[in-house]
Length: 493
Ligand SMILES: Nc1nc2c(ncn2[C@@H]2O[C@H](COP(=O)(O)OP(=O)(O)OP(=O)(O)O)[C@@H](O)[C@H]2O)c(=O)[nH]1
Ligand SMILES: [Mg+2]
Image 1 (cartoon, protein in one colour):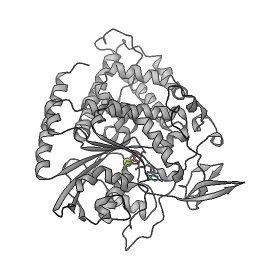
Image 2 (cartoon, helix red, strand yellow; image 1 turned 60 degrees about the horizontal axis):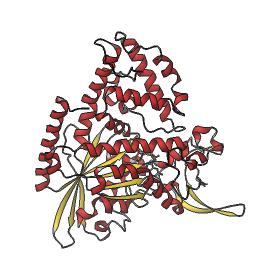
Image 3 (cartoon, protein in one colour; image 1 turned 135 degrees about the vertical axis):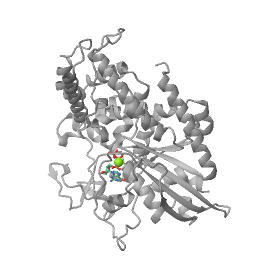
Image 4 (cartoon, protein in one colour; image 1 turned 60 degrees about the vertical axis):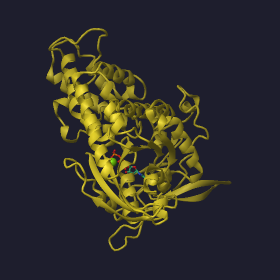
């Protein structure tokens, strides 16, 4: 699309913001850490664990500043943006450590500022301010819409919905779509029904059995304060090519609302949070996709590629480039590695590396330092070898969340079990080749009965820890220290 007046105003805003951030950074070294990830990827847990590590310490041998005792003090400070709610760190830690429950899915954006007083390796005392934003993962799906017309989005959404496993879930919406004529007069009731059926379809795709990732617009799934507003009442249409939307038509109305959504929802979200990042951790839950099947894995890859592309396109003005140099480090993290025996961690990393390869190459991250890590921000399991016939299976032991089911057994949330979730493929090639044969070779929940699925990664309760005078003790993790060293280690030297 050619730049519109709104695009130009937006670019001017981004530039002004970059200059303001630049001057603040001169006096008060600040790092805006982007925690990027689709819904349920593990963002809220990671942010909580990161803050807890800095406030409370623990075993972090690879995180140099903490391991060598150079962090004198870390404390939470008033956040910079008055209009954004504070990240509920204390609540999340209590829920995790005292109640052994994971935090609820995030429904709105929140922010936290952490000030770290540390000693440089040369002995000088310094301060680093870390700003972190948490938001519902669904909203991330909107970023690619920034540069997409209604017509393109409509065509892409329809094309996707015609492939399995989506096609089977799109029946009611497709049936209604067939009754709509884009050039007919705008009809509010028909639009409401289309938006409702389309949203039902997106929700069904997200179900853990299918675990589809590419489901824009994100606010249809997580509307926040916008539920029921016209900006959320539109849906794709089967459009004729090459013609314009007639005035007063259904098509024109849908397009107007889509534009309102981009203007009122997507642009501010991008401008306020993503255009300002210095560094990023991109969190990916590949195991949920393995549970669901090869289609989910491909869908996840496509969603990540679309999102990561936005970070390249989003920093185009001279001022924003001068005053806020591009993201200089990006860490791709395969989360929930505690669901696998450590013998499989290398495989998980290799799969993630392959999954984001294209995205990372295409994006401006070419100039940035990139790393890939399999981590568990909070480790909920331990390892054991379990005798199975003549074989010793590398297993993991944990307490499955109440209601989880495996091999026909439903867990009560109290008893510990040892499970063998399945070996990840030794080589990730083929998994991601178009129509890759290896991809076809594994079966997930989307293919049928749970017993036939090749992988079964259960959700475990957070670990049992002994509270210390009402305070949460240091929490177990896997490679959180490596992630912290990569993301902030050099700024604490
Ligand atoms: N075992 C284990 N499970 C984790 C870990 N991190 C996240 N989880 C699981 O993943 C779920 C989602 O984690 P969240 O941190 O809430 O994910 P999110 O990215 O904030 O998700 P949204 O808020 O929906 O965008 C949790 O409820 C846990 O079940 C981890 O380190 N280990
Ligand atoms: Mg969250």
